[in-house]
Image 1 (cartoon, rainbow, N blue to C red):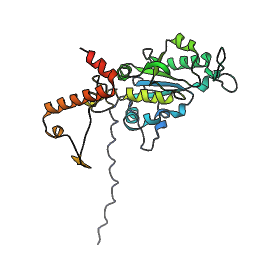
Image 2: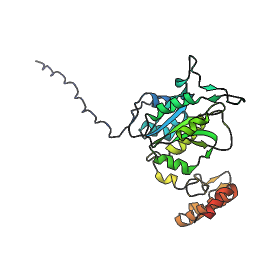
Image 3: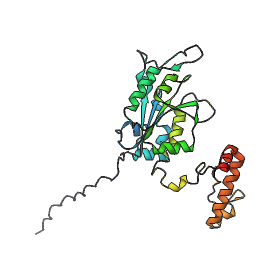
Image 4: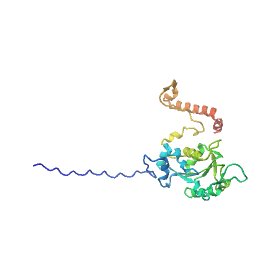
Length: 278
């Protein structure tokens, strides 16, 4: 007589996994595109917030959705809120601009349109977040400003177009004008992305290694020293011997000397300020 085997038991279900302990972390699938980092998640209450008022919201997050800044957005360390200026346009065609008072070429962004957009933006961001207008006549953006913005709850950026923005908006809201340099772009979107990249990388936890911001250009008033990596010899060029010596004191002295040499040669304005600093 043959024994009948007992019915097989179904495999036991694994215990449910506990949710990750992360404050405000965004769950992102590997296939998620940069733009979806913004569109598929609610606003986070305590994350550093960048608002961008723009005629081209589809330009964002752009490169900000990639690499370290994209990963930081994914993790909820910061968030991006675009405010489409066209939504506040006038009439059937959503007009946002008009001809310059007093005549002249080009068009000027209307104060009633931009004002409505600013009001809508400011209603959903901490009042301590400054409002900046990307403008070639503004204060030069630098590392000091990036550090200051990183300590704020966020920032509202206004991207100009055409001949610019009605001056009354700047005066009414106390907007600070900021420039990337002595050149003119067709709009403020690229400048806004550059400003945000420089700022977001300074937020806690974004770079991973906080020491990496200590020795880079402008951190101590100087340009950064040269960098090298393996192989030790490439196309007849060797890594400087001091960097291979293991003597950390001598390495630090070499790096400081090269930073001073490069700054003095390439940026006499920075060098003058550095020399005058006690």
